[in-house]
Length: 438
Image (cartoon, rainbow, N blue to C red; front, side, top):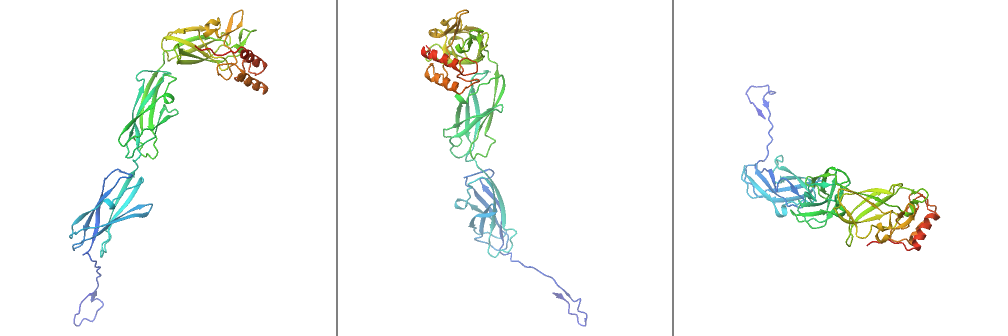
């Protein structure tokens, strides 16, 4: 209260003025002004993080043993608290407190972490300058893998139906040893093919995954094929390094054509001199030396009048081959001994119907005298290389239930399983008809 005391002044309503002062004790005032993390920037799960917290003495007296703490807020809960006491800090000065070793922080899962660093000085009544915050973004790189490069075999010019394999380099970008890394590819956004890289890949190392056999690729049409090779590792949250693209340009292969004439015995109609139905035949070109490897195969539908099919081959070289006929309910039949010369990029003819000598060991049946017609034996319903009771049993069972349509046991091609089919199989079983390879 400020007032006058004038002698003779009888009006006191204007003598006084008041002033309010709020006094705080600034002799003890400290706070955290800044925090840095080590490492800074990207933080990985399992990585040890230490902190440098700058603490300033805002008061007027020397401070010592200032308690400095931090808490980590997870799901709105202060889950971790760690405290260190400072050394002496003079008025206006700062000191850096190092939170390391047991006071450091090791995140175990990816996410955003909010940290509050603050002082808790006894007698400090100014709390607006106590606290500094730090936000850590933690990503899970302990499991991080990706495809870095791809090579194809063959490389360069690729032909349609040519089998292409790939060597895919997979790198471990993370910090943990990886095994069983799933690696896949898609071509022009089609169905993916994949496999597991079962070799261990140490941090920073790479491994080559081979896509061959069932994981290889064969284009059925010419064009540009864009492949995406990628990893799909569980708990890998960094997808920017997962994928590598690879482009193949495929051109039409130079085909070799075989016009082959064949008659499945049961399908032949003696009255009309034609087949009862058109059907698919598989022709394989097999090497003439044991184990008679198949170099290429082709499928075509036999014409019911000419008994011929056009079979195209893309993956052979000129040479001597056995021509091997496979039909769904007939005996597998090989061409004559010694094989046949096949020249690539040409059109060739082979007729199994004009003489039994066209088949290996003359394994054909004459079905017409005039004109002379020879056929491959019918009746091998289960495709085990012989006509026997097991085939007859299948036919009898289907006949009993009146099976019809496109069924294996229909040897005559009339789309009905009956005694006619049973008779064909029985006759060939009695004669011990079997496949005769070299």
